Amino acid sequence: MLRIAVFVSGRGSNLQAILKNVSHSQNKVEVSAVVGNKPGIGAFDIAKDSKIPTYLVSAMAKEGFLTYTQLAKTFSELNINLIVLAGFLKKIPDEFVDMYPDRIINIHPALLPSFGGKGMYGHFVHEAVYKSSAQISGATVHFVNKVYDEGLIIAQRTVDISRCSSSEEIADEVLKIEHKLLPYVIDKFAQNKVKIRNKRVYIED
Ligand code: GRF
Image (tube, rainbow, N blue to C red; front, side, top):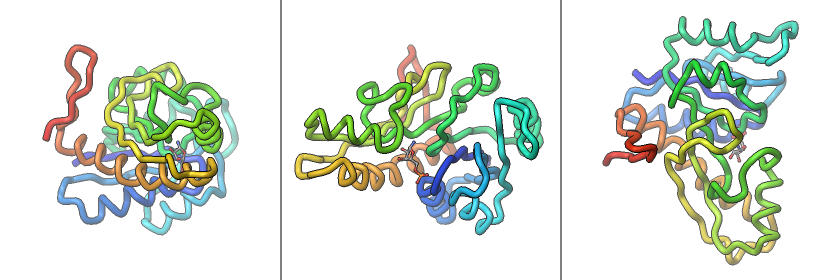
């Protein structure tokens, strides 16, 4: 059983896509925890509707929030074996990254290594893509390391944006891709078909 914790900061459409896929995927995947950096987000409502425990995490000690050390303890009790960042806007502390080598993944709404790095999230990404007049965009799922958006790339999918006339239109097209790509990659982890050889990622058929 692949037990995953999904980290969120907003509406949770990627979480929703994961749950939809899990509910009918024959591979054994369970979303065992949803973690956010602030209360009252739409993603927590989605989690609660699916009776998934939610947790607040903060790098600084804060009333009602777990520290990352406390979260790691909770994760070991839940037997979490993959951490999925789905719109999580905070940087994961280095010590936490070290606890889960090659077991933390993130979805980025552009084709890394382009249009990535600190400050490149949400609408900023699509505005930069639009301004560049790029004719394609897409989504990237990559391993999380200690530098924003620089972990090894696991999977990418492109979308033609040559007809888009705003960054919002690009965002809409890319989000559709994300909702397919992230569940696909999680499924491949569940089948143990994500391999790293010579610092390159291969997804087996
Ligand atoms: C997605 O565009 C994702 O690529 C980015 O943040 C957004 C999260 O959206 N990291 P949602 O909260 O999953 O709807």
